[in-house]
Amino acid sequence: MAAAALAGLLVALAAATAGATTESSDAAALGNLYTSWNSPPQLAGWSAGGGGDPCGAGWQGVSCTGSGVTEIKLPGTGLNGSLGYELSNLFSLKTLDLSNNQIQGSIPYQLPPNLTYLNLATNNFSGNLPYSISNMAAIEYLNLSHNSLAQQIGDLFGNLSSLSELDVSFNKLTGDLPTSIGSLSNISSLYMQNNQLTGSVNVLSGLGLTTLNIANNNFSGWIPKEFSSIPDVMKLIPEWTCSSTTTFHATTP
Ligand SMILES: *[C@@H]1O[C@H](CO)[C@@H](O)[C@H](O)[C@H]1NC(C)=O
Ligand SMILES: *[C@@H]1O[C@H](CO)[C@@H](O)[C@H](O)[C@H]1NC(C)=O
Ligand SMILES: *[C@@H]1O[C@H](CO)[C@@H](O)[C@H](O)[C@H]1NC(C)=O
Ligand SMILES: *[C@@H]1O[C@H](CO)[C@@H](O)[C@H](O)[C@H]1NC(C)=O
Ligand SMILES: *[C@@H]1O[C@H](CO)[C@@H](O)[C@H](O)[C@H]1NC(C)=O
Ligand SMILES: *[C@@H]1O[C@H](CO)[C@@H](O)[C@H](O)[C@H]1NC(C)=O
Ligand SMILES: *[C@@H]1O[C@H](CO)[C@@H](O)[C@H](O)[C@H]1NC(C)=O
Image (cartoon, rainbow, N blue to C red; front, side, top):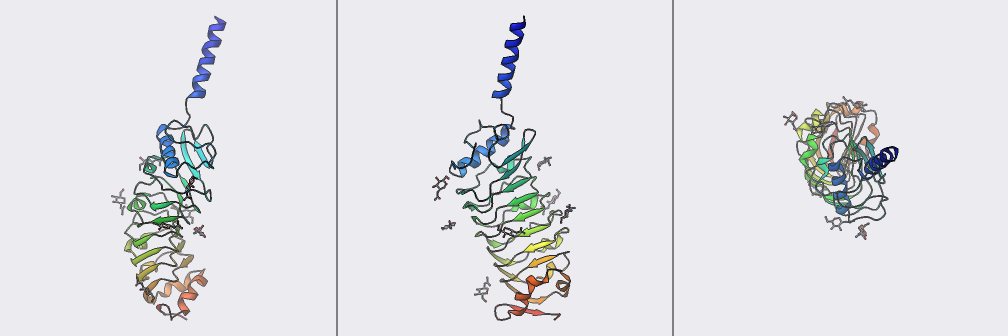
């Protein structure tokens, strides 16, 4: 009897050890990422396929709450390849930091829907800003700077009421600013410098910004007088004075 009970316990323990603790759709999405990055051997614990256990086996840069993957932080880890196509299954993911790698291709239309922090800065992404950004209603920090993103910025910002820091600087973005950027009710820092943006910046005048950098673009017209109340106005001064490269005129000295 006792031996049978002990054997049963051992079987139960073995099953618990063998059974992955990670949500299977999260495990599959991370396996797809690993393949999309050309199976980087430098990532401790990571493996391809859906059979791995990122939470239970402690994959490098991965944090979990219960069985859900909540954070992937792999900045500067020598990643290349692309972002794959299964990111939208990562429902628990809040933080995704893949900055300072060599990942290329488009930023996929399918992004994790519940992110609060997305940092893809300093990679080699091309294409435009995907429309899926407009659905990430919880996003607070979005850094896409230092890539090769191009084309006009779409009307992506209507529902992003939590976004407080937006950095799209050092890309190849063109066209006029979308009107929905004026509805970023919680924005405090906005970096758009070093693109080829055109038209008026008036749409920014009602935002509660503490930091704004719009230098080295092709904006035209007048600088709204509201900008003079932005505390970190230093970032504007080069734009304001380098009249040889811009068509700006200051309304206040
Ligand atoms: C891309 O990453 C893989 C895995 O780390 C590596 O083997 C390969 O050399 C890298 N390719 C380039 C072009 O850097
Ligand atoms: C995450 O997003 C999905 C789809 O948008 C939603 O159904 C789910 O409730 C969200 N989960 C959390 C934890 O916010
Ligand atoms: C975005 O990332 C770049 C490159 O890592 C960094 O220099 C910049 O400070 C970041 N922007 C914000 C708003 O944190
Ligand atoms: C970035 O990607 C483009 C293709 O989109 C490629 O031509 C270029 O060589 C890449 N640059 C780097 C630094 O990898
Ligand atoms: C904002 O959210 C509402 C409700 O979820 C949706 O109907 C609308 O299409 C969204 N707008 C944008 C610009 O995504
Ligand atoms: C607004 O942004 C601040 C950080 O600047 C953050 O602490 C706060 O939670 C945000 N508010 C909303 C409603 O998202
Ligand atoms: C921006 O201005 C520069 C210099 O004035 C000019 O060469 C370039 O064609 C302009 N780009 C756009 C998109 O208007």
